[in-house]
Length: 109
Image 1 (tube, rainbow, N blue to C red):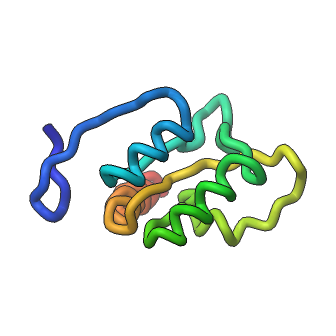
Image 2: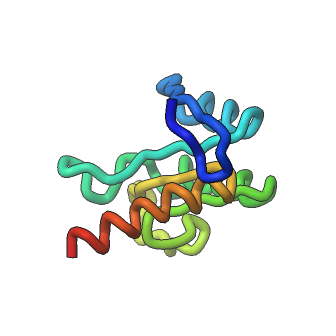
């Protein structure tokens, strides 16, 4: 079982529905990841009606929502169906994940 920075353990869950997974994160804590892939470089989730509403809720509850390069709420939409990567959850867990992302980016340069 993976261990978090604070010494607590974590487990992996994936319901397969963004709203259901996010609801579980709000209740129990954790992080939801939908990073870009080789097939979907821009990400899969839609900015305007998936990522932004949940990012707003996450930030209102003290959490964070990132694209991998910045806050979701700071992304200026270019089109109605624009897609984006998403890392959303508790501030501590999102920071932990982003540390890995930044470390990997440094290694790949």
